[in-house]
Image (cartoon, rainbow over all chains, first blue to last red; front, side):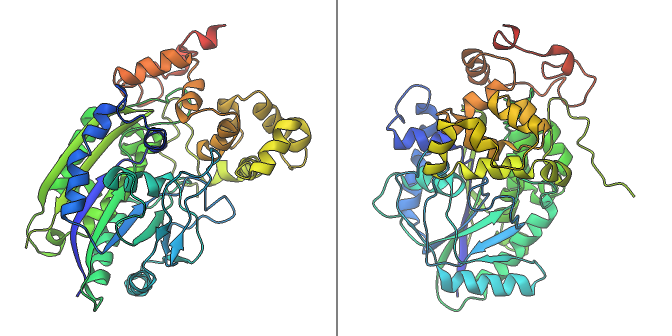
Length: 285
Length: 144
């Protein structure tokens, strides 16, 4: 039986990808950001999963205004890192896991979540920056990745509660897969940031840290936060945090298991326009 | 019955909802076209001619030519789409975001290093934070 063993949460700022690709990680501006992920890179080596289910958002890359799926699951065998206008990031191809992805799509749709199934899709910094932060610069990513794109670009985006419930459905789907697989679920994006208008540059450390506390210890309360609170408190792009609730909803304690162990917690301001938050939660046996 | 839009009183902020998306459809799709290197070259060679290939409003075209991202957003643009114009110009996301505040690049970068813009006074229109309309522009770039 496949099992979700851990969840990882991280911001996915494009400038972090650029800093890695251009060899700037030891510059004084970036050094504190990457120091927060040293533990995580070792943790990834010690806890290598068979598959990563990676929740992220597309930033007008694979999905223009022609089509705006609320939830899209990548069922392809591979996904190409996208050219977002600066040229593609020099990172490995992303290998998918079509068998598990199709299984999850079928199970989750049968649990009343209408997923869009995507067999051809380029993946942008939303997906590749978290991989770079957690895995460094390998020749190939350590395992297959199932991309799961959430619309957080055009309002209304899915509510935190719906994302949390979707996480529960994903957990059931994974656990009904017959092969023994160690699956991690990652929720990415956030934390507080606003990229537009005269309010650009908004950061709210108090909100972010309270969100981390809640996500760990009282996830149902985190799921109940309405959209407008994210916008007012964490900036218009802080709404990306709803994606963390998908990963959190897939953890064992939500389904009657033990509370997760906090393996790592990190917070830093700024990376470009954004507050960087990062958590690793492990399911306890 | 009208739709629920509780986000209209957030200062200095335009939420990209279905209404904005309809307004900005061609502007944003023009931006998407800049993801192809050949289109970036054609746009740079003659911006006006390239824009005229799109059924955009004159206001949208002027806002793009002026690289005025606040105007672009008002006309239905979304920052993730508009970022393709910035990428074509070789600008970073920080430079683009900063350009909407009236601050110089250095002023905006310094604000971020000091912990970013505070939410205090910037939650609801009518408070007295730095993102409120009566405090614009915020920096030297906007006061030239």
